[in-house]
Image (cartoon, rainbow, N blue to C red; front, side):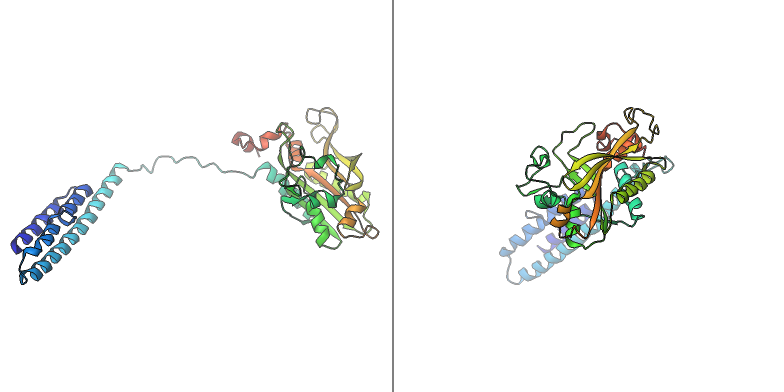
Length: 339
């Protein structure tokens, strides 16, 4: 049996060395070392050997197995190397060919507007405040003096998660949270995403962005509010921009106003952008209602303040002459690369 095992080893090594690919090599391994392989069959037939022959043949079979496995390993590495060389030759790359053009992106116009407004107000001494987008009705409405029957609290206007938890419909809750935790003087702006139950059209979206401002201190007046908004409008829309106030009503400010800016395209003469009126509605503002101050733990007899809030999309549309808000969300590169 010793001679048979040695002949088997020579035959196996010869076949392994002659293997042309990895599949042929695997077949050799199975034929000799597999469960039904020739070397395995020798081990199973050792029961018929004498007690003296059994350890000798067993040691020889193990030695042959090691040599075959070693030869398989060497041959496998050589075959892999040959296959790699073959693949590299077949897939040769012409490095002189022009590469694909790399398109560089740019900052989205909404982000550009937010960053620009931040810089303007930081330059006036404001700080940036942030808060949760999933908010309590207490902060979104109650602390801001919005009564239970106010239209903004209806299901068709606000996205409720539960009766007391909702997706914030404005960034004003950030103001309430700051007033609760920070003593005056307060001078902040609150940029962020807000949600309302609106159908998508050219001027509405259920998801949009707001920036609100809040100033609380002693002796703050409506004149301070108008002066602040004039500086903001001139820095953001151009030095010739004028601001006018129209009386309005907001539950969280008293008195309240809508602030319009003169059309930066036609200078107030009337054009397509301002719809012939010469003015563009920009934001809502007013003096912080005494009840709001009181709800947030600030003495309205000692402190006064003003607040304002604007839609970032509205500013972007006004500044860039965009007539459809959906363009800002559809991610059409042909549109966005203009900015």
